[in-house]
Amino acid sequence: MKYAVTAATGKFGQTAIKTLLKLVDPSQVVAVVRNPQKAQKILPAQVEIRQGDYTQPTQLEAAFAGIERLLFISSLPGGKYPRDRQHLNVVAAAKKAGVKFVAYTSFPHADQATSPLSADHRVTEKALAESGLKTAFLRNNWYLENQADFIKTVLAGQPVYYATGDSQVGWAPEAIYAQAAAKVLVAAKPKNVYEFAGPMHTFAELANAAAEVGGVKADAQAVSKDKYRQILQQQGLQAAADVLLMIQGLIGDGELAHPSKDLEEVLATQLPTLTESIAKVFK
Ligand SMILES: NC(=O)c1ccc[n+]([C@@H]2O[C@H](COP(=O)([O-])OP(=O)(O)OC[C@H]3O[C@@H](n4cnc5c(N)ncnc54)[C@H](OP(=O)(O)O)[C@@H]3O)[C@@H](O)[C@H]2O)c1
Image 1 (cartoon, rainbow, N blue to C red):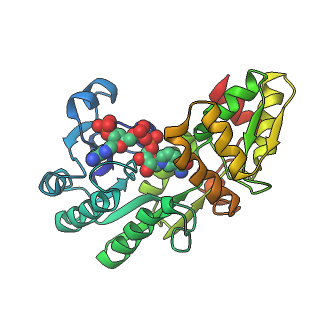
Image 2: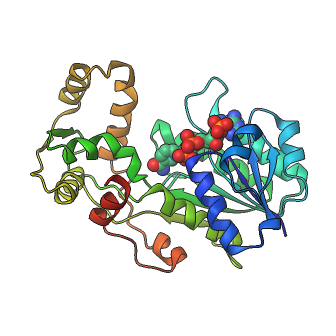
């Protein structure tokens, strides 16, 4: 049986490939990538590399030939070629190529979520469901690395701000989600939906955990969205302000506040605490 991972040159894809190599014979692992030259430099030598750009339907279909199980890693949002169209190309190509099972990295409760960031995932889940392919939705909560600036600022003993109130987030290191994705890909009886999340915490708790790791005092202030925008402008982050505020908004609305044991069940181990994860990723 051949297993393929799309977007395998990304951070998520590289960890998924490494995990897969420990679970199945290397001759069964295929990396589907936009840029084969880059892939040859960064992926383990025993992995077969095939070109598969999400904007190139014919190329994708050829890349998926003979693949039984596909880990479909969602594309980056905000590009010129709309992400939902990229994803529909992948679904159609998987179907045409005769792929048997697709595990797709999605968004928490994508079928009910209303934030702009969740929209492409809802479209993709629907297309996969309608395709007739056997699927598993890997609804990943938040990568801890998304909060790199916040955590590094706390570690440096500087003040941090957030506009999410007491809403919780299920942060976990990206590598942990990627390991779980590879495990689902090889699972004998995968579930249809996994709500993957780390332990639930607020931004105030994130600041306290980072402060503990850094041996500093946390100075985290809850502010309104207007104040948050002002702070971003003062920091010269005008260009990113809309996206950052959208994300603070979806967290404030509770879109990531979904506790779940799926991640530790698939990994068959206790998850690291938030403090342990910060120490591992940022120290
Ligand atoms: N839940 C969360 O907290 C969270 C946070 C961030 C991202 N995400 C999602 O997780 C995904 C993986 O994250 P990551 O850290 O691995 O991102 P990354 O390191 O930036 O890698 C992105 C990958 O997508 C590939 N890609 C981009 N456009 C493509 C296209 N048109 N066709 C084929 N491949 C394309 C890139 O290929 P190249 O190497 O050729 O550029 C790269 O392999 C993201 O794309 C996003 O959907 C989720």
